[in-house]
Amino acid sequence: MRDHPTIHQGMTDYLPHYYRESPITQNLLDREADELASLNSAIFGIIEQWFVETATWGLAACERVLGIVTDPLKPLDQRRSVIKSKLRGTGTITVELIQNVAESYANGTVQIIEDYPHYTVTIKFISTRGIPANLEDIRNALREIIPAHLAVVFEFTYLTWGELDSEELSWDAFDTLGLTWNELEVYRAN
Image 1 (cartoon, one colour):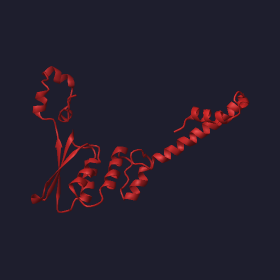
Image 2: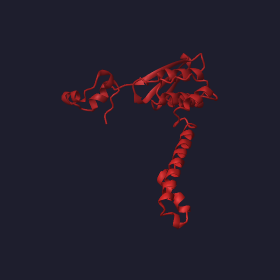
Image 3: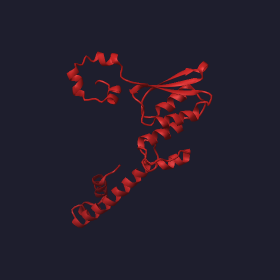
Image 4: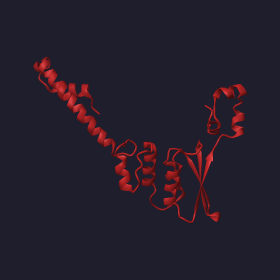
């Protein structure tokens, strides 16, 4: 995106040399550069609405086109996840598609475990710990693409005692972390 100084310099370069020192001309170029920079910013702001990753107020249009109920109280990243999931969730249902839809949410990498004799598909979150904030959105998106006769089960990853023991923290060092039980469950050492 071109900013005020770049635009001003570009216009100055097109002028004959005898106009470049004129205060009137410089004032005029300043005002025009302000207007053009403002217009340029507005254009780029609109272009950002065409892409799910950068859209803000344009998310409502995407949701409308995809048949998603707009919830303006949800954080933008969760709304983007629902849109990306809906866009990805088309075609023949495969493990890769289920994984692609589940991973479009912000909780990272998942492992899909098929258990067709027991009619279940298990979604195991492996790269991050705890329950995703938008689990209900994930559940709804997966229910839309997974055949109705298969149950969807979620498994979450938490801190194990073995991992905590491998940190070799003294009780004093552990106390200085100041973790609540919920924070401890998803704790990951640096």
